[in-house]
Image (cartoon, rainbow, N blue to C red):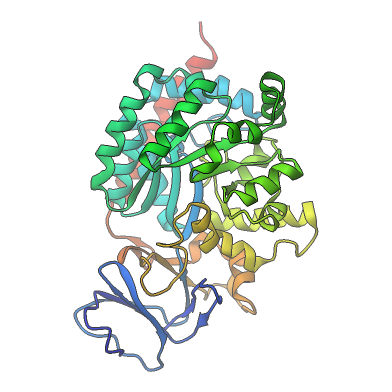
Length: 446
């Protein structure tokens, strides 16, 4: 044991660690000591005997890595999983999702949807998600209860009619005050899109973010129709218009970012804008492919995201990275986005995209102990010649054995430790019956 390791709360030992640090260090026979929720030390020691009286995770024969980062979610929507599949974005959103949200929008709906989402994410190795939705205080409270780290962006969108514009900034003030008590939650602004708010409100949003040092999380250039509409109405591209109101001077994360010109790509890279790649949702809705390879070459940090389960229909980042890496091979050529780079996007680069790489994304001394232990004994994991190749092309959510956030074990040996999984699932099924009946009435009014 190292002399520094005096106040150890927990230890993860015996596995092979892929640290995702600047050198991409891989440590066999590893020992990770944890104190006050942070990593104290990461080193190699054979024949290690864990100290008594501390939480101990025996990771022998396993892979240990940073927890996965989901850069774009709508966790509260999880109860709408599969309610309106096989539709283009506009019909899906305007004819199904927005009408249902107007009827269902309350804290109980968002809280249960977020519980279901957190359960799925913890089980599949996600330790941080970047969310945008209504009643986001319910999301923040639920994430804190479930023990998972979250960026909670309070959404505003005029076109849905869910909220009154006159109340928006008063609501933001209350929201940011309310969530200060949740240690694992970071607050953000989440204006829906360039077309979802008036020009006046967008300018006010940017000013409010600057006054309160807030990150802005929004949808950007998701469809050709969106880009052409803005060019027709305002005479510039969305990227150029946002530049004119100072958005890119703030910490910004943009989901989708599909319809980008070469100058757009260069501009986003130069301005340190975080990009979130949501391949399954994007192709399911027929929107296209984010130019990930070009964005990364331009200097942009890119994270993987799942989007919400109403348009994906899962929160499994292992499925997302497998599919998304292959899509980039189709677009740019085999090997243009190697597996190693995709794993960066799931971890340290994802953290950079969300402006949280000082805290998470790699297993290094001083960072939060957000990690997962992967069981690599299943047939689909044997043999392993390259760790990154395994994680991208072979791994599945069922390989995640243990999940830890800020030193707290949320799942151990596939067992959830701090929530009633059966109760969450039973409640979600009951809500599903009600939602199905409501949707039928909305689609077939008499």
